[in-house]
Image (cartoon, rainbow, N blue to C red; front, side, top):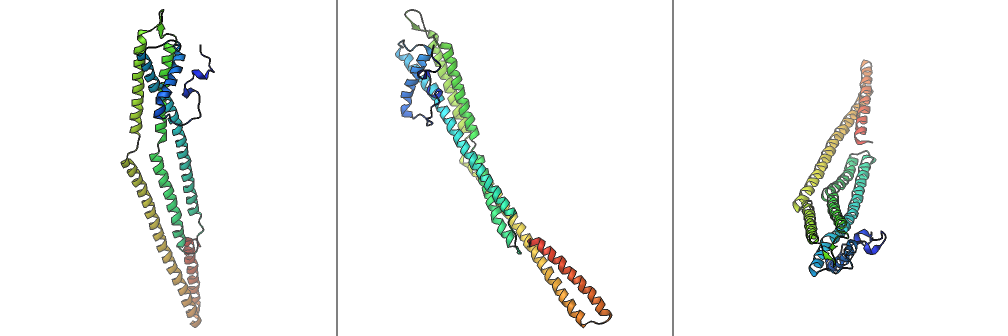
Length: 300
């Protein structure tokens, strides 16, 4: 029996190595040969010589199963790191958008409609940040790739451990020892299963890739949304400018009415003077009312 803490009997993906790089293709043969030594030891056939054909078949099995498990483990960890970076980027963009929206909402207004124009860039910048966030969220679907790599690696690990459990100490029989006839067919079946897993992973991976047309569609949709927000903001500012202009005109007319009433009051006498005083009071009240409306519009 193998000791649980014997590193020589552990595959690379079981050792928790800190090397996060994917194994280069030029070293695949060396890695497969090293994995084959471990597999032989775990199956209990390390001391028994194998035929060249069986050695080659097991080497293919190590390459297509054990090394692929290592590849999927490292690819999954790499995708987890990339997904974490994308999440941080999205959170940062969301914070920027919220800060810009708050700045536009609490921007101190002055006694002119220029304050509305000053608020528009903040709103547009917030919309731009949200647009980028929408594009990143739509295109960077790391969760799908993460689940694809996890499933493929888990399927291959389960098949490897099942194969080991079934054939540990049972590969040879008789005296002198010879390979059990069913072992060759069992390895062939495991190879077919490994091919099916990797093929399914590739199909799912490429099915989840975004094509240039998808990128273009998402970007166009986001830009159109930003353009609509800008148009709505411009329309709102234009309407506010018109209302402010009308309010200024009303204030000017009310003040002119006060001046005219004061002039008439100076020239009036008797009953006309009393009536003109009433007109003056009403004119001054109209000034107060129109100025209040103007102040509310411009936030002065």
